[in-house]
Image 1 (cartoon, rainbow, N blue to C red):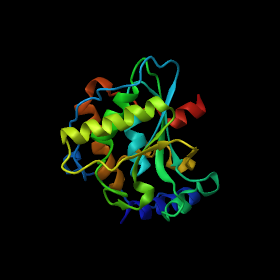
Image 2: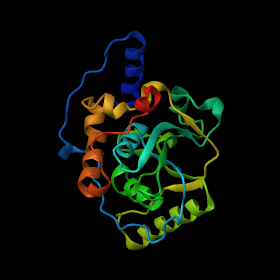
Image 3: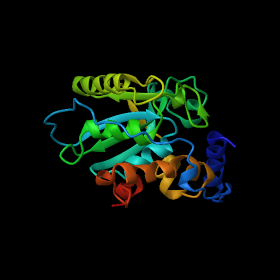
Length: 238
């Protein structure tokens, strides 16, 4: 069963108040994709003040959000859509692959605790495989593309320079296909998509594809890992 099918069932279950998806836990060693240890960027955003925003797309937003919710210095990570219009920022429409949207995560972070460059290093290392074109793991379509939506010229420079650096170092067996473009809009996804990894850790898709990403964050970026996730729901209820 694909992730899209699982999500449709989850939506239905949420609507009727029943758990309609069976769950099995798969060991992190059986992860769908392996993390890649990569060097930090040689160029980073300098002297940023106040809470900053990064918007990243790397396949299913459940896992992307889950990783950054366990990242120190991140004050909020919200699943949503970028690349298309507000009119089509709807999960079922985005899932057709015809809206221009990518499943994305808006990462709000404190630059005094974690830099934009470190966010990108985690993104390229443990969040996803940036060499996969219009797919990630079992999910295919332009909505699962690898993309960085920048909020400033400096972010654009850092992202493009880092991609060139990693390609030159040949840290991957294939070239990076991640597209860098200015952020024109971010639209939060439906409530049932938020905090999905934390709420459904033993669901088969999450256990196989996404829990290992968090485990790799803990292992490779131990100094940036926090055990208690920073949840969207916590911000809404506090």
